[in-house]
Image (cartoon, rainbow, N blue to C red; front, side):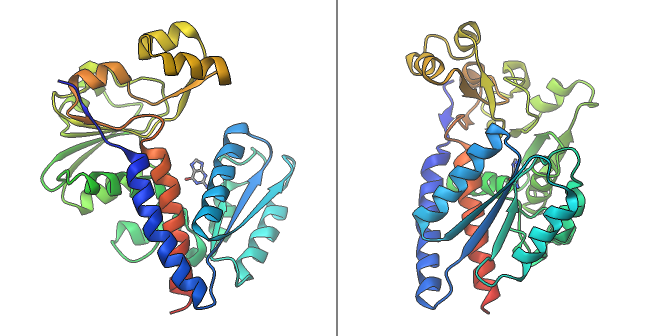
Length: 305
Ligand code: GUN
């Protein structure tokens, strides 16, 4: 079997077109949706994520503000910034990029964000609303996974979904979303025994554990839908060969940047067993940003109703 590729970049582009139209409507009514992204310190991956979020804002017509703070910033200083952003009427969404430096209490910062501007869906109020199926903000990566499955008309009701990873950003909220859509959901984690066997029971297998090519062919039921949320780096030619074979694009990527991206799923092995799979890059990544844009426009729509 050669798995069908689920093209996240394509679905993100379609969603972004809809979001840009809603943004234009609001702007014409005098309310331009605005997102403030806060970056503390100089984690290179975080910097890249924030920059691509800001660029997408601009491309879709949203107002974007990036606030960069030094690595030594204290919790109190970050709380002061959040308090200001909470009161600003031109800012509808606030995103504090994670992870934060160790001296900052991330939970205190998240709790300080106005839940109506919490476009990441990380505030306990929004986590509670999600659990109770109430209106709030759904975290962007889980929302992106659902949007992709829906675009390809892949059914969820009655299906066995296995989620690898229980993070508060992905695994836990995604499990709730799948449950709300009547899937039978199993969450696996570092203490799960015989993880490969549990994974193999899945009609829909979601990998969100942050471990390079962890999901190999023995984890995948033939024909299953495999969604790869991982974003890891491969930095040696031997590894590129092991994971991607003689793919010249990957070798060129390695030469140009010093790394190439890989998910939590072994790409060649999955392609031989799965029925459908997401690529990395070009799978869930673009959808996460698309959902952030949509949540920000939604926040602005709610602010003026
Ligand atoms: N770090 C990794 N993913 C995310 C995300 O979706 N939002 C924020 N704020 N930080 C992250």
